[in-house]
Image (cartoon, rainbow, N blue to C red; front, top):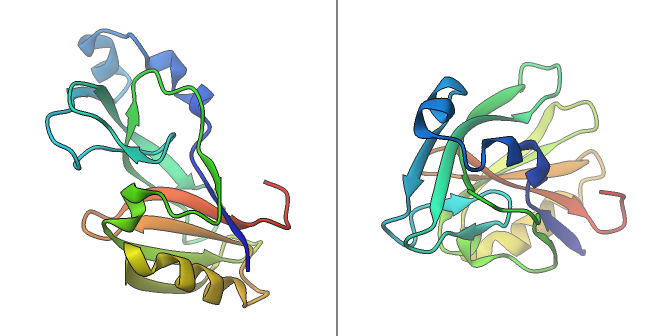
Amino acid sequence: MSFRILGIEPGQFSHLYGLSDTDLAAAGAKRYVVDAKPGFPDRVEVRDMDIGEHAILLNYEHQPADTPYRSRHAIFVREGADRALDAIDVVPDVLRIRPISLRGFGENGEMVDADLVDGDALAPLIERFFENPAIAYLQAHYANRGCYAARIVRTDLPV
């Protein structure tokens, strides 16, 4: 089964780009200079940022459904990111090299299934989850810190 991995739409973060550290703090965010790779996974481009790039750490609501699974957590966004990843049948390196918690949700935002996997075994788990017609979309989370990583949908459904 074919799948599509999607980064977060960058327009919702562009107002933070170029702000002073004081203004970022007032918005509940913080700027970092990337000093390790891997170490700062960007959620827009779904890649590990390069050393020297600027990362903005902020709180993001990745599961807005009005259910007990509604959720938000810290994420990194590369300052200046302007194009979200849209990859078909390809697991980006940033996901492939980390343990991933994969969570399957129904149209109503309720969790249907979840599992842990080494990132290099993510594609078969995605395919297995999508064999269940009750699963409408998936969310990948970095298992170590629990942070949202990316949304995954079937390629035969609209984004």
